[in-house]
Structure formats: C-alpha cells, structure tokens
View 1 (cartoon, rainbow, N blue to C red):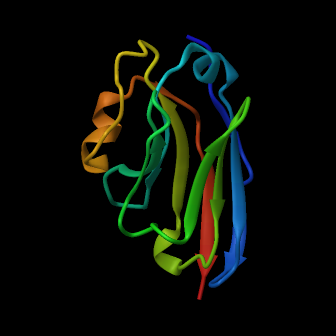
View 2 (cartoon, helix red, strand yellow):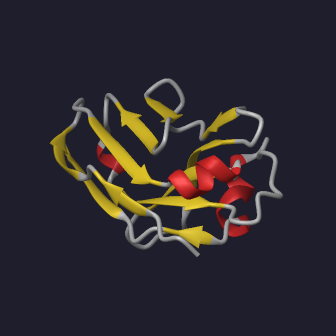
Amino acid sequence: QVPLVESGGGSVQAGGSLTLSCKASAYIEYGSYVAWVRQAPGKEREGVAGIGRDGRITYAPSVAGRFTISKDKDLHLQMNNLKPEDTAMYYCAADSTARILWFENIENMPTALDTWGQGTLVTVSS
C-alpha cells in the first residue's frame, strides 16, 4: 500500500484556524473514499469528515460548519473556530479497495477504512 502522509498540525488558541493536508494522490486518482479521522487522548477514533467516490461529503455534527474537507491531488481539512475539544491526533485514511461509495453515518467510517497515515497532532488551548 502507498503510505498516506499528513502535515499541518500544531498548537493554536481557541477560535484559531489550521489547515491539514495529506499526500493521498494514489488513492484520490484511484477514486477511493478518503477521510479525516481523529483520536483524542483516552477516546476512540472518531470520523471527522469524508469524501465519497461520487463526491458526496459527510461531516461529524461536532465539526459541521467549522471544518471543510476538500481534495485536489491531495486531501485537505480546513479547520476554523477551533475549540479545546478538537484537540486530538488527526489521521488521513482511505479505502484502498475503492469499494466504499460513501458513509451516510460517519460514525461507521473509521472501522471500515484500511489505509492510515501516521497522524498529525492538533492542540487547541483555551
């Protein structure tokens, strides 16, 4: 599998913005479902946002209206109005089989994806 490589994490104050990027061209060109997933300390992985094979986009309710997922040759996540509860390791993930169309319920997404990056840390202070 071609590795996914995230960048753009860092530390910001509440209300600030960050943009994450992921080198995912192999999967985007293949037409795979691609997504961002996060894991806060002591919690399970949580689907943040994903782009289906048909271009449909799904957001977790906790980030809708604040985060924007997009793709060109790479995958991006624009995060605005960040809150302390957004603090987590953020992972880029993909379905290497290109069989998954999209997820109406983003809660089911993390366990279905088989290719993951190493993660980039986002820390939001109050």
